[in-house]
Image: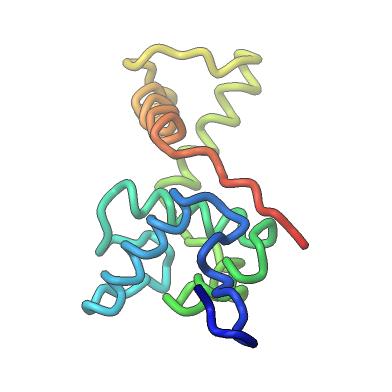
Length: 144
């Protein structure tokens, strides 16, 4: 029971999910243990599921509760860095091939072995779909 005049701890029941809180806490501990958020946002020093979670936070930063944004700032993911997109030449090449293939065939329904102008388009699309399936859906932000 709280002493008279003391407020309730605002973190006892935040307006976002417990899963979000746990993921942030885990990454927070790693950051304080020496892991750094990569400037290029690939988050290579983290496990794949943590990298996916961090990329999701970066992508949906504006939709997060202001206190979630403050917590992310505490681990080094700020409003400014969230808006910085990584430059990945391979992804840009892959997207160019996907667009060209779609323009010609009017679809991206390809097999794993599909190669477009020497680029393994089927394998790349398969990898992208697997990553999308493995990424948890965004936690809806609750605004007050």
